[in-house]
Length: 459
Image (tube, rainbow, N blue to C red; front, side):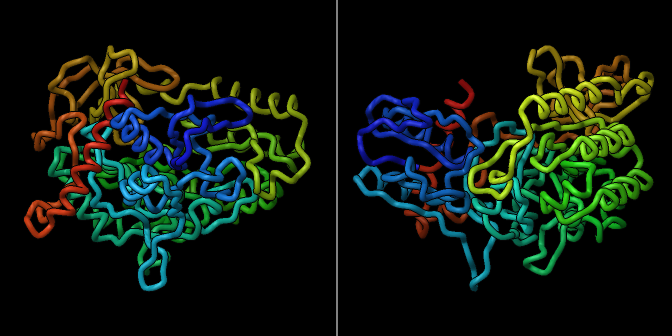
């Protein structure tokens, strides 16, 4: 969002910037793009208190008056919004993108982009969701399900691999819902993708809710066992109590979740399942929380995201009577302490694993890779490991990772060189012809903004 007047924007009574033309964005990507654009023209930048809050979900809020806004499906119109706002106009592009009256995924997957990590490509396969969870704002902000066509996703993946990418992440609010609006499915998309994944590369499937994967369990077990797909799935359960799940309107039961986990664990060797828990939902009783504890004790998830309930304005749950804060904190602490009490990797020392190396650790002392189960493995800092599958022997384990000693270096085939960090990806060749001069100019302008985004984000 852009403000056309030279006035400071306040959030919760705290001044966020000096009195100059100001910017705030509703979506983390767009938020950062405008940050870069304003750096270019020496405008000040406003930091919001919560980057995950999407003003599109509440566009009539008083603090948004007089602001230009770009919705989450309209990021490709950022140049237009900046131009109009700098002319003194207020514009809002919040509508959903549609074709033939049906919602589509959003901005084109062919848009230029800068990868934060040149070895990892992130593709959003759909936007919106089918649920109406009582605590969530996603439906308010992103609307109904809109899936990208499979051929566009495959095309983008091929381009990414041609640019030296070796790891592909498929993301969305719920990958399991993919294709239900366009007559296809997540398994069909994944089978199409694995055909174009080069040797030495892997695909990671993003979060899916239980009800939308139940009917595809057999196919998903085969896909997650494929050598080019990580044996990993993030399936948020949120609660172990059927009553709480019903109050959340999650559209599944504990038994449904357990059926998914049990089926996949039985058929996919070394499968990693991550999950989420919300502690302190307004209707959660002590017995309900005990059910959640029992579920976590049963499965000892290697990756568990524990969150305290937070009432998001405008949601049904925000109007419910809240549980006392101390009780919520105690439940959160108890579950967190249980999670810290076990080590999922205690029996891995001595095992030999093939690890795809894609990152450097925060302390910059190790390279970071992941085995087939998408478990984190640290390797020595040797540049020739980066972007390769390296065979290692596990020599040390901690709660969150393992250390590997390479025994066969660079076991994967040589891939194409990746783009330099900060380089621009995704400008189609046809846009370089004279027929598309105007398009090229806009693409270059957007590319400059994106490059500045990378520059200032990395500072």
